[in-house]
Image (tube, rainbow, N blue to C red; front, top):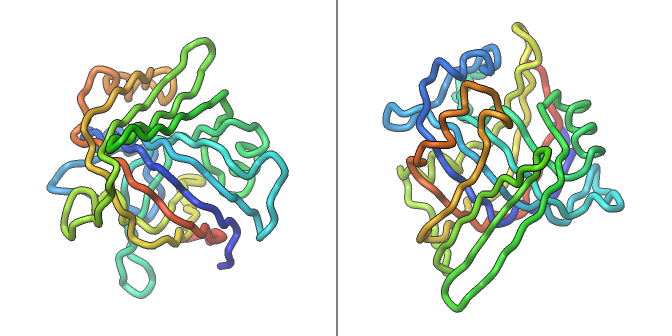
Length: 237
């Protein structure tokens, strides 16, 4: 594997929902299994910024800084050395530029879609507000998190550690083939969340089986500062 993408992922807002594992069965890549926390199966709605993005160490004009919102869930895979790897599977990833969606689909077979997007970060004294918005047809969907402005390390064994400490990506290519790629970054710090607002048409964006999430309260909402990130090239397992 080699370093395909280098960038920063910053101000990661995450809303985590407990779901019935059966609704994820069709998305589960071969040779992986669901990774649970305290017997709960999670999906996470995640909004964040790509900054200083380079493909093979080269910046692509107008594609350096941009938003992404994704819906993901958590898996694990026991490799040929009998070692468990903990990773994520993306149900859909939304970015603002069609070229980004095309390249990701071509290279990784991920389900990317381009939509108009915007974001706002604001610091008010000791309060930090982070908002991501994306428009499908005429509706703006929003994910807003308000937090304290001082970040702290993630506690070992915590729900935050489970959600953030997944360093592999897995993609279902077909019923026999899975792509695997490694994501490298240091452990992140998280801000104390005060409140949040989520206005998302889950059914229209992600499919009827996720529609009920629009009326569900998330189990947890996190805000992480993020860091420099390296995304490596894929391999087939």
